[in-house]
Image (cartoon, rainbow, N blue to C red; front, top):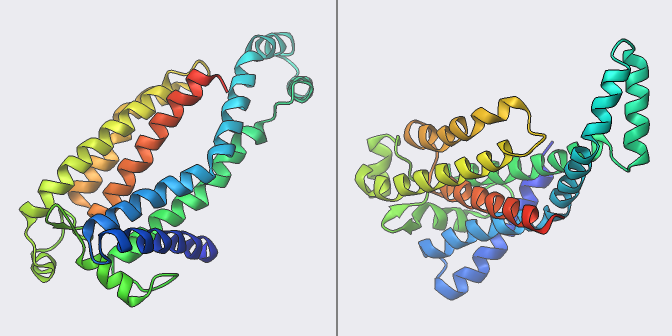
Length: 248
């Protein structure tokens, strides 16, 4: 069902690798690392408008909070009337629940597509827009001496096949895990501090970073995926602060 998304994502990755491959060499680890980073930046840039729409909708909902509270007080015993009055108030002010959810609905398949394609390449798959040559190049690519397809919990036999050791992978993967966890913590904390944030979000700054730490340590999260995770969360963090400061 998401194959068109996977093809589009892999094509963007291919385009960036063609550019950075010309500058740094097609088998360069730096070329592939930059291709992953700019793939994330490209896709997140395409999602700026939905993100801004979500921010505006959230701000409008916060402005309506006192009136919504008054409606809940006034019609506490009449749920149907409360629903009608709430919908009318939101419509009069150009706000809808759908406008808040739409950006997340739009972003989800793109983010899933990005993650799927990177996992597929790291596993050696030649599906979508990348041929066998590009996939082989990615599998051979190294960042600071560690293969982009390597991960901490990789079996020793697989590490030997890549011509690397667990220490080589750890020296790159662990800093990426820590940086990704830190970026995740600060972006989650920013979201949790918003006036209309649900109560459960107060735990997310402490829970979400565990994904990078636990996943990177015990699950097959290659260095290429950790690089994606770090870039994704740094973008989210910067975007949150810019949108907040600009009062979009």
